[in-house]
Length: 232
Image 1 (tube, one colour):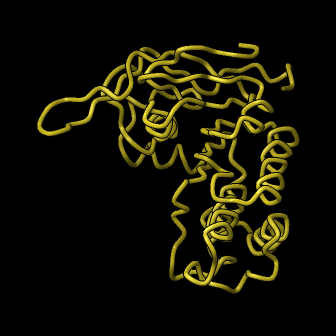
Image 2 (cartoon, one colour):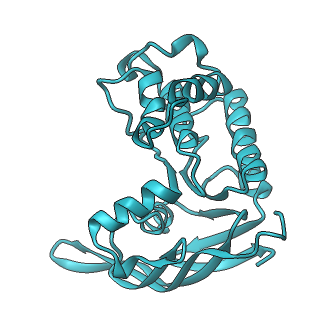
């Protein structure tokens, strides 16, 4: 991580999150507090069911937490309405979903062009083409999601997240649906973006190699951060 970029871009304070299960409240997250600085790469690791993906969605402002606070890019999510949260995500956040969330009526190229078009970029098509080439899909640009394998859809989703040029990129198991070779390519792209653009990277992963490359690892157990490794 570049030490010249020390501003805190993501902060949680006693974060909790409850859901209803069988008519009873179930606490998924239990008093989580940490800070992440600009340009830092952080892996959230832990067993399935420990709350990792729930935490990631809350950090990105995709869902509302039930207790505590999250500050994203200097703004308290508690203080923002849905429209303001959407604007904040559009300005700062990229998200790689485990389930892709590609638009079925758009081709791979059109899916990746979408973030640039929403920002009225003149080079949205050229940027999308270069990103699809970077993830090894230059020959699949005109294909629709239903015509792509799971691994190919994952790579399109990753290219789309890069196309928004986010200041913070959240990734939920970004290499989980990929073979080893493509997983290595995507891993390298993530860290190239982190280094070249000083993009803050927050990754949920079961991949020990990917986690080890991050500046810091947050270990989750039973809805809590049980251990932190790496420089704070």
